[in-house]
Amino acid sequence: MTTHREPLASVLDAVGETPLVRVHASPDEVPVYAKLESFNPGASVKDRIGKYMLERMLEDGTLPEGGTIVEPTAGNTGIGFAVAAGQLGVEAVFVVPERFSVEKQQLMRALGATVVNTPSEDGMGGAIDRAHAIAAETDGAVVPQQFSNPLNVEAHYATTGPEMYDALDGEVGAVVAGCGTAGTLMGIAEYALEQNPDTHVVAVEPEGSLYATLKGDDEEEDAYKTEGIGTHDTSTNELFDPELVDEVVQIADRDAHAEVQRLAREEGHLVASSAAAASLAACDVAERIRDGEVDAPHDSVATVFPDSSERYLSKGIYGDFESWEG
Image 1 (cartoon, one colour):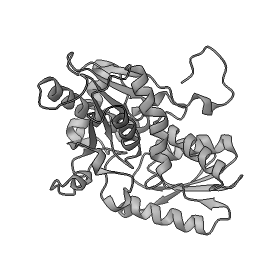
Image 2 (cartoon, helix red, strand yellow):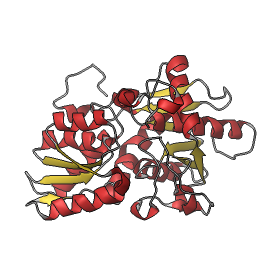
Image 3 (cartoon, rainbow, N blue to C red):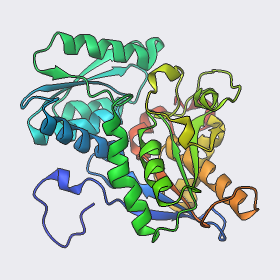
Image 4 (cartoon, helix red, strand yellow):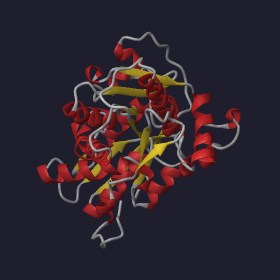
């Protein structure tokens, strides 16, 4: 985020250094702080991996100069990659399941990218298969593959984690983040555990998602409305390392929807359902630290609010739960 103290040479210089803001619903004894990732130029946490991954891939030759990236994405990653691609002279094609936010797809196209839709029922697995097929038919094309590329994790190890710790003077008791690809949480967790191996690490997913099964929990797969986090096929989530995670917290869609509206009404946060799920999980962890049910090295919790609710207005995110399309 720009400090307004000096001009920046490129929009890419405005990626990162987002505010860390207190969540007032958290207990005074163990406050929760959230990184507001909508302050990035592409308005989401995925700007971080867009910049970091493309720069590293161009440096090591994985992506040729003037080449093409083809990425399966629910939307925010596409926007983040498109922002970076436009500044780095790279073409971008994104494969998006039909059910995901129309606003995100419009923004990807506005940034000069090509968007290819796949059937919703094929899920992200179908989008991944289609992306690889397109890349195989396109000269100079690569699939960055956010679901398996360790550069996704590295981006957050190099930026998001250190920023949290700098803002809190190193006193972070727990880190909590939603898992889609799991890159955000894994990068923060790796950094956090290097600072203090007793840091409590929590993954967040919607009820009906299956990340918890990777920790040995017996959860049943079901549909969910919360967008951007969760998985129906853990075989595609290669970045998630259960050894780095103390627990997986599941949040019901109805609770996340209510928290979206509470965060706006009471705290002025215009955030989406993934941020709301993270808020509820982080506040729960903070309360358990306060009550002595969770051991943590410091009385604070850091989490991530990945994007803005403005990308989900067409889905009725501020209406009643039954009409919310998710």
